[in-house]
Length: 212
Image (cartoon, rainbow, N blue to C red; front, side, top):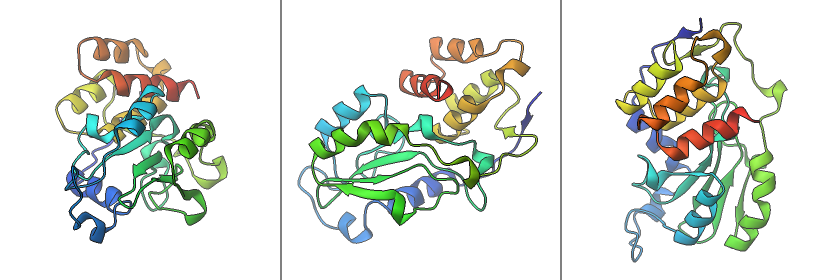
C-alpha cells in the first residue's frame, strides 16, 4: 500500500509565489482596461482548454490573470530535489503575447526552458511540442517508497473536494498513483469524477497524464 505524507503548506502563498514570476510586480500595479488584476485572453483560453490545458480561471488561481497548465507533464511531488516539480505552463503576458515555461523538476524557472510567443498563432503552432515535453529522467530522483497525499485515490479526491490539497497536488498524485496496489484501481477516480469530487478538466488531465 502506498504511503501518505502530510504536506503542511501555505497553499495560497505557494500559488502566489508560482504566479508572481510570470506577471511582473510592476505590471500588476498598472491599470489595464478590463483586467485590473492581470491579463485575460479569451481566445487563448478557448484554444488551450479545447486541447486539455487546465485554466487558472476555472480553478482557484484566477486572481492574477490567465494561466494554463499542461498537467500531464507533472512529475510526482516527491521527485523534486530542493523544491516541488511544476508542469508546463502558459501565461498571458501583461505586455502582450504569451510566456511559456516547460515542466521542471524542482519548481525553478530555467531560462533555457522558458520563452515568449508574440501571437496566438505562434503559440498554437508550438503546442504539439510543448505538450510532448517531459522532464528528462536524469534530472529527478524517484524515492524507493513514493508518498501521496492519502493512502487511496478515493481519499485523495476527497481531500481535493474538501480544499485540503490543490489541483496541482491532485494531478501529481493521481497521475502517478500505483493503482495496481489498491482494490478499486483507477475505478475509484472515475467514481470520484462521476459524483463531482473532481471536475471534468482535472479528470481528463489525469487520464492524459497516465497515458503518457
